[in-house]
Image (cartoon, rainbow, N blue to C red; front, top):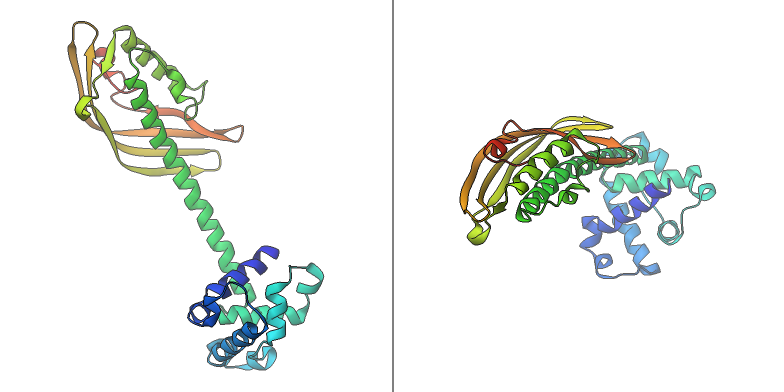
Length: 263
């Protein structure tokens, strides 16, 4: 309840009626400011649809400046702030904020938290793929030195994906492949990422990726091009409370080992 209590304080302070008054111009409210706040809330409650029935007689449509000052200046305490009279005050404040009552406000907060957690989870999953692709490009830039450790934050050590990527990359390094980056000759782009499966311990993401790469081979200077748009599937798992890529389906994997391609 303490979180809800503090959230209501913040919502009141950010309310347009408050921001457009003298209250929005000062950092610390004094007694006179709480009198103004009381009048603003009273005016809003007087025209509220929620208080145009029996609920008006149950709750009233005013909050004293003393009650408001206590609400804003005192820390939350279970004993004090679970009192029925105070809960009715919170009902009126929540009506002022545009909600039906305190319960409606709490429900809205919880729904938004769930949505925010879902959005954060999706952003985090998508970021793993973006960061992995950046690591791939850095891997190529270091050829013919193999720096497979660039994957350590994004791919599980014992995964089949890392085993395949290591094998592909090792072969290209042994063949003395070097990435040409001068004048942006080599680059990549991820067009979009779609979350296909979103489970508590597994996520499957589909990407559209364009890789434009130019490699030269050792002293011979032989050139190998990769210029293609493809669809890839990433399998991301949660193991020991850590999310990383476990496997990947890339229909063109190993192309440059027969000629050349991204791990």
